[in-house]
Length: 427
Image 1 (cartoon, rainbow, N blue to C red):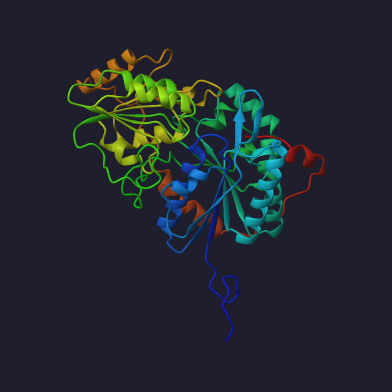
Image 2 (tube, rainbow, N blue to C red; image 1 turned 180 degrees about the vertical axis):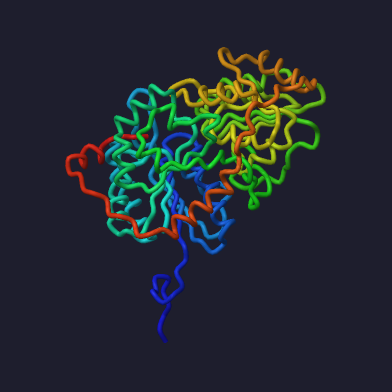
């Protein structure tokens, strides 16, 4: 009897889609790619998906059926030494060599019809370059670069784009550039004066807002838990605070924990898994009150956002998408360093009347005053733009179009760029 292998050429071909996120800091990139993976599987339950991530928390996020996760050795950023291994000793080059080998081997074996790369075209230190060359030479895989709406201020974004030779990389390896936003809110093609041949490959998907609620998660994780908690969102009215992954959210978390809450409301605070231990200890003292719940990690934050009377949040892409899709009143307290991405996004959305923004000193009184006004029913401004939040429903259509496309052209070889690209830290 002939044994049947998954690689048997006589078996019906299944579509395969791979998503890569470098994930040197926070959970924003991998959360976005996991949402895209679920959208693709929801549209075609027979598709096989491979998620390649630098965040081991990827395995704790709600994932769809037919999705496997490959986690890469972690890279972190030290304020003094820059990027390097998060766990191992050695240098950035040491860990990048391992990550590049894993990426090249996994993608060569998986042979995706479509590869979607999040934000960094060549990955950390050029780690995707061997895999991209192999995929381009094979001619089977359509490659997409996915960009969030705001990269940074125009000055910083343009400088980094040039330093990373992103235009050249896109020309050689990528078929399309998906912008996960609405050009009426922020148009990076215009703001960053990107070349016409890059703009010609660009597709605005709309924000990845609606359709985020997971169908695979039954609750949210409490502090220190690794399983799904049985506790649901509070039954009584509550206000919510989110600080993203938590690396730089200590000031907002502590301010919310100490802020006076509106009468008749509880507080729910999600600190993120990366909140520094010292901040977590301080928060434990501040948050010792009966009307406040504190959680470290949430598998599916959407139900919490949708049920809140008001939301205070940092200005990361995912948090803002969840806020806009929920229609709840929101106060965004953006990070301003080392990147101004959150500040740029928050100010643009505030100018359009879509949310409120708090800059400057993050004090409990300022947070409490906003919560009090919101709970009192102070009418928000009328939004000036009906923001497109339907990106998750459009991505499967874009994948279908690419899969149906012609064989991909092989990438031209540029030996003079090889060494520089392979060793450039581009996170």
